[in-house]
Image (cartoon, rainbow, N blue to C red; front, side, top):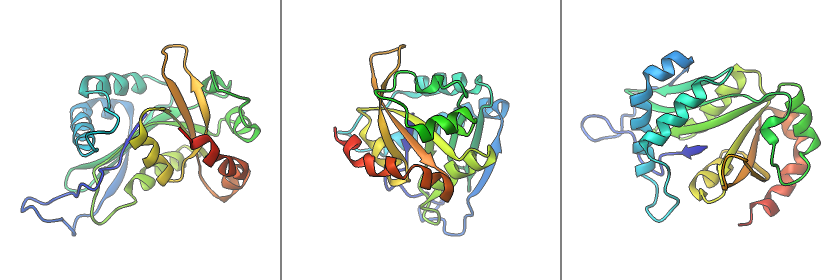
Length: 221
């Protein structure tokens, strides 16, 4: 999972000035449209990554991004929301988490009961990518994108897995309201991942209050 918030980059008009008159519009995209947008999404990914500090975690390249994208489009329930101004300003996408709990395979402890219940009821949606080219008139664009994606699927909880070494993505997600709930291994590789969740709505947030208190200790390292 990658989340690149632009790292201070401003969206510019042709004259090099911030385009204050632009209106950012959100639009839902299906798998076929997402595949047609592949090249533009890869450009957005590359531009977003280029704004990250050089000494930080180095994200996978363009080809790896497209491989992940097209792999995700084949998952049942795949959906994407894009943001448009005078061009593609951001996107987020993912798929529903299966109710059998397979998503949490390899979790470092017992899955919290509140998360387990939401998973069993089909209320969890995995967000696998968030890309944002920062816009001067819409700083919270990443939050708008992810909330729109969850709302469209009536999912009160978002879920994400992030490479433990990917500090920029982890920092960005925390600033957008995600809670770090533990670590997990995936059988397909040796990378240790952090599991994060994003509650949507007051009721779900209240159910996860204990996790919020736990987040600080789980964040170390």
